[in-house]
Figure 1 (tube, helix red, strand yellow):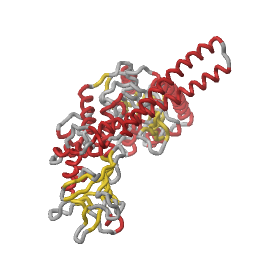
Figure 2 (cartoon, one colour):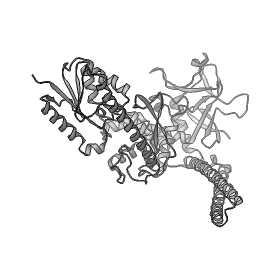
Figure 3 (tube, one colour):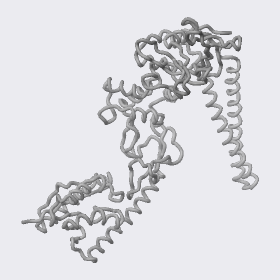
Figure 4 (cartoon, helix red, strand yellow):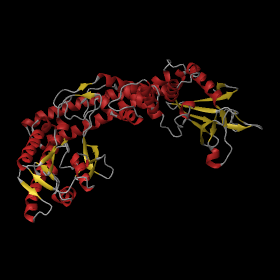
Amino acid sequence: MSVTAYSYARFSSAAQADGDSERRQLEDARRYAEEKGFQLDESLGVDRGLSGFSGENFTLGVLGEFIRAVRAGKIAAGSLLLVENPDRLSRQKFAVAYGKIYQPVLEAGIEIHFVSLRCVLRPNHSFVDLLQVGVEIDRAVSESAVKSDRSTKAWAQKKHTSPSGIVITPQMPAWLEGRVGEPIRVNEKRATTVQTIFEMAAEGMGKRLITRRLNEKKIPTFGVERWAHSTVSKILANRAVLGEYQPMKGRPGRKGNGTKVNGESLKRVPDGEVRVDFFPAIVSPELWKRAHDSIDSRRSPNAGGRGGALRNLFAGLVTDGNMQLPMHWQDKGKRSRPKLATISKEADGRTPNVVVYADFEAAFLTWLDELDWASVIDTADSEEITALEEKIAALDLAIARDMRRVETIIDQLVDLPSPALKARLAATESALVAARSEREEAAKRLETAKAKHRDLLNSQVVYSRLAGARNIETRSKLRLEVRRRVERITFWFRRSADSPRLVEDPAKELFPSAEIRFANGKCRYIVLTKGVIMTLP
């Protein structure tokens, strides 16, 4: 009766997949089995693209399955394992490889035949037999370490200096494609989906609602069965949509990302500066900002739950001035109208102040439509923008002047390598860096100031027309538009004999029933009476 010989083959790179490695290993095993009269079993298969240096072929591949089958007694004693060389089984250190691969096989009464070396490691092997295999393992480990070091250095150089727009790794954002060395191409259908996700976020829709709509419309995913809110979240956070590429590297850490090298977990961390315009941009900076302004607006404290945030347009904005506590949505069922209620009962047991929600929402949205927004933006706002524009213009002149100075000094240094000139060059370059940093900060402040103006003066949104809508998309947009203009609402209460109601504070003659603080810091004071809001002078 012939002995069963299981053949195992492995290669670790795409280049080997395109080459002859797999065919050579399988053919050599077939010739060896035929020569020795063994019955060859090729059911074990091939570990394609799995590293023996990191141990992937043991943790993820068919080799690990074979070892587990050996341990479970599913491989009969007296069987054989055919492999080209020891480095096909493992390129890890001898102490690691022997314990987890060689020992279980040998202890189960299975011989290991190395086809290329024409040597056999038997269960009752001698020290000399083991020494020969150990030398081969150590040689493979040393070789792999050198290759790994070279590869790491080459990759470190490549990811920082390679030309923009050229594929340097198959692992790219899901909306991009291309082979290594070729120009990066945009998958237009997927890019359109990404743009749709950003547009929905900019309209005030949350990640879970976006996910639901994508699945309802049966928009194709990027390789999985259904859209998940975690996928939408990752897309919205990925600055690669702007064309940016952040080189990363693995660093040992307890909270790794699942990647292991020699049993050690690696955590991916940024490696150097972001490369701008590396990928084709599929989302404009303006759309990115609108989407993330909308996302940030829903992260305010006490912003309410997923459902309540859409019923309550003012979640996270409303405070009880008397008790100095937030107010939240309260609905006690059919016998009571939903209200905004102070969280005093939960905080310290006091009876909460309340405002009937529907009355306030309708009145407040009408008030927003009728408000003279030009009066909310006073001279100081315009002066801030003007001052920032003048500052940026002055900095641009200073930067241009310093750049010319740098060029002049460099030209002089060619003819006269003077220490004084070198010191002047260093000082000028330092001033240039400081001026550029100051200009960048001023530009950010200017954009923020202009955005507040645009939001406050935007007459396209008619709040009262949207007030009656009950679909989630419209309510989401309405909530976002309120937050673009309103920063905080503070109610002030005085109790009558029967119930809390909004009135002027008796201690101060003109103190309002509510203070409305806008996004630019300006305030207006109002009184809510019988479902109508009046503005106080």
